[in-house]
Length: 140
Image (tube, rainbow, N blue to C red; front, side, top):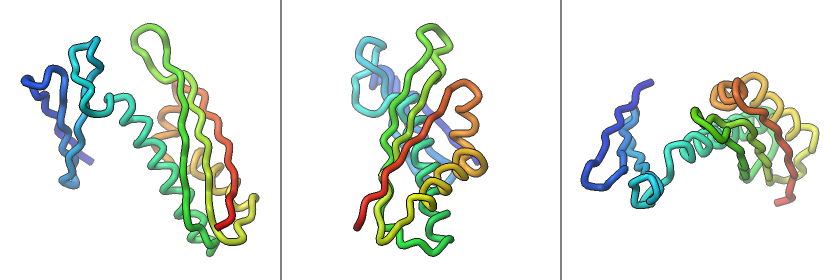
């Protein structure tokens, strides 16, 4: 996996990342740090990527189990250390999984498998952060 990040000097503290798969992601800093608030902060993209990674796992696990999953939303809240390096110290992920006749036990198992075995992003972040999860199942 590869990624190239380039600073855009005219933007203040804007950066453009080009991923190995050829996609572009913009990032920017807060105005108090020289940015213009035109894109997500780099650490926000870490959280978003982690939520995407685990949501991907949950959906895939449920589909492979032949469950009729039609939606998956992950709401993430976090806390960071107050001094540098300002690593994540707490992350909570709340899953809202939608489907037809979805068993709570199947969703619980999918979330657990993602965080204990498959989601490399959340497993990596668990080295510095206490990660907790919760979920709810909504009928479609």
